[in-house]
Amino acid sequence: MAERFEIVEKAVLTMLEDKKYATLRDILVTMNPSDVAGLFNCLEEKQIPLMYRLLPKELAAETFVEMEPEAQELLIRSFSDNELKEVLDELYVDDAADLVEEMPANVVKRILTHADPEMRHSINQILRYPENSAGSIMTTEYVSLRPSMTVGEAILRIRRQGVDKETIYTCYVTAPDRTLIGLVTVKDLLLAEDDEDKIEDLMITNLICVTTQTDQEEVARMFSKYNFLALPVVDGEHRMVGIVTFDDAMDVMEEEATEDMEIMAAMTPSEKTYLKSTPFDLFKHRIPWLMLLMVSATFTGMIITSFEEALALLPALTAFIPMLMDTGGNCGSQSSVTVIRALSLDELKFTDIFRVIWKEARTAVLCGATLAAVCFLKILLVDRLLMGNTSINLLVDGVVSLTLCVTVVIAKFVGCSLPLLAKRLGFDPAVMASPFITTIVDALSLLVYFLFAKTLLGV
Image (tube, helix red, strand yellow):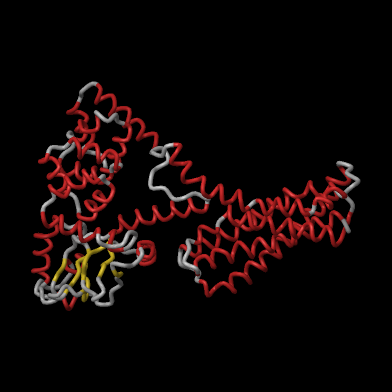
């Protein structure tokens, strides 16, 4: 698929340079708007307005929504007033609201000036809701029906209003005061036995809906759980105010997954793509966590410093520090990633913490015992016999292996419990991911190691 897109990309650039605009237009009209938008990423700034004006009106509007904010801003600045109004008239309200949020103030002023009063009112309504809420990602363009309507009247209304609505498959039944009372699908209407059947006899009244204040991540989870095409959004008095569609839920899923991955990698989330980010942007998002982890790692240095005498008496102990720290960090990461993923899918709650700890404890004992046994044999056969390191006796081997087993248990406990505690305290569980947990486990594993060495070896 990627190779095919590269071929199309080269062909488009060639046709633009050769000014074969008619041929280029014939190719573009056969493509999906998302793919057309992707082509604009490889164009020079002066070529973007030129190719955009080759697109038919409807395709141009759909492509505009999929384009990067930088390209959108460039086009808006190059549009005449009539061109801007034509684009805005073709946009759905939620897409127009997203556009307003991403543009500079002077561009926003021009957009709102040329939007019709109804769209301007809807945009302002959506922008009132908190960021990352259902209200901020919903659209106010949906088909509403009355329970007293007949099937024939409902189909006629869909035909008249459906052109400007984001989806017509699911229609919502509301009372005169906009209270949501049911829903009916176009399939139900088309398969009704009689055109005189009442909507109230066909509609589903057992509805699942969200409020305008519901977190967008919760909305996305509901789409995944119930396989919705659209989800109704109501206010505090159960009055219908909009719908969230499947495509918007997919965008939220991608955004939330990206944010979790960045946090788990010890970076501040960024709204820019990697290629759009400057080195200074990357520096700003990475350096705070790196500094925090660097400072927290000083505890590891303090522990090593406090046991300098033990290391001086038995230098062989030093050789096993990296293995113990790496194994502990890996074990902690395994548990934390598993629990964080379960929390994001709403499979776990804080009340499950003891069940999680008990499960991880049994897993840790199995992993720890296996790793300790392998480590004991490895040190005995490789380090002592094969490499001839006489400073490593059976007691040293036992201390290292025992420490490894205890480290695994500690790491699993820390890795599974910290994300749950973070969730309980209102933090993103992804914060308690690999880098943070590894730093904690490193310090604890060294502490256990030197305490065992001091107690059992007398150093």
